[in-house]
Image (tube, rainbow, N blue to C red; front, side, top):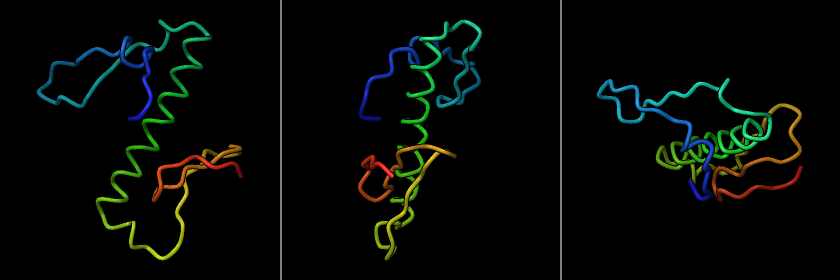
Length: 87
């Protein structure tokens, strides 16, 4: 992930199951500002993750542009270039 997501990193706790990538935190511990920051970080992380899997599967050779976008979102993420664009 390119950016730094302090709320995401600070609020995560290892579940301790031998799954190093499985994390949990209690969202009720976040105030409104922190929740907004977390949502932005989660969105960035999710899009980066999908893009990485897309490229690993050979998506860069797909002949059409491929985008991810939340419903009613104003911007979209190009999975080939990993760049945000306005709709």
